[in-house]
Image 1: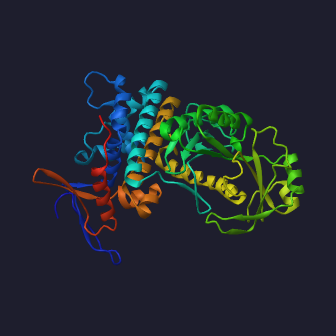
Image 2 (image 1 turned 90 degrees about the vertical axis):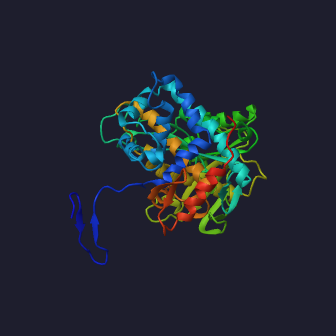
Image 3 (image 1 turned 120 degrees about the vertical axis):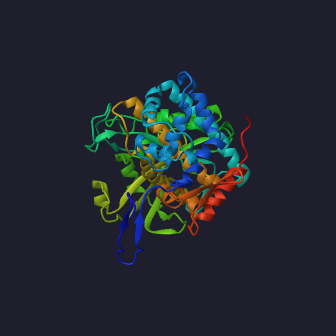
Length: 472
């Protein structure tokens, strides 16, 4: 046995192995090359390069824009720290020349407010290309679905989450849950799973802060291409934190700028609303996510029974009551009545769907919880620095990584992989090993024979090669 080689004894029914270093031409994370190439074909890589061109030093070895793209690819691939750039850096035959950890830190440190604004503009430009490519090869953008029906237009879901910090970080504070960390506010596009916007905030930031909701919504709208922003119905969904009068008035005001925006938000059960619920007698069965009737759940419109003067004109209130499931949090009102109650406010006019559909459409907002959960596994579940500005930059690159995953699935994949959460996508496609082979002046990436998803990976690379490119 040569030096550096050791034997692995048979354990159970597993084959006996002899393990050594020195393997050549073998790469891991071969599928992650799709993410890097999607950044190229959508123009994101070039856009980031132009956005950060002013940060270049003399004859830099690594362009700042390229470093930012590599960080986003690393986060989309499941990396959690800047040191995980090493997975890309030590495979130059697959990912090219990747910057050192120190260079990655320097680029993050240089991303001030102006640079981040330019990166957001580059993301918006790349999104326009990605959507145009999607419409060309798929015929249209994916639709948001509720109760087994398509929701017309685009659906924007906003929600905040807590990110716990286990060390002292600038602007990390005590949260409303008595933990310690940040309280970012985020906006996702339900149609595709793209991360449109995010705002990193102190842990003590309020859940229903009107100014923050307006900031994030405006940044999200700026990410939507003009043709869709002004030519497509937009539905903005939030939980009760978004039901402030100022935020709803802002959504209503968007119509004055040619944006057909409407809202569906959770509403507080005030004394007047409780009284309206007790008076209501037109309860009808609620429906499930598949459109079938839901046993034990009923809904009723309260618009004519409850005061809506604090809401924009035309706002409707819809109440839902349901037998509480074990562990449900109940108010005193719920305890007395024996049913769990929830109320939503929407400015959907009559004719845009039945009462049952409007209520089910709002409950589909719960999908944003999955977006946040998987987003935390794609970069913003932990922040690398004690400096708040660096963590702000990290959040924007995490959102970029989420976009790369969404574009890869929409443009290149079908079936289960097109709908898979990042963890499954990484396990089956992104982290697959392969061998680099060079023949006849061509470089081949050979996926392991017998890999169950090899055909899907090959098809994805084939589609990638045939995607229409933006004009330079």
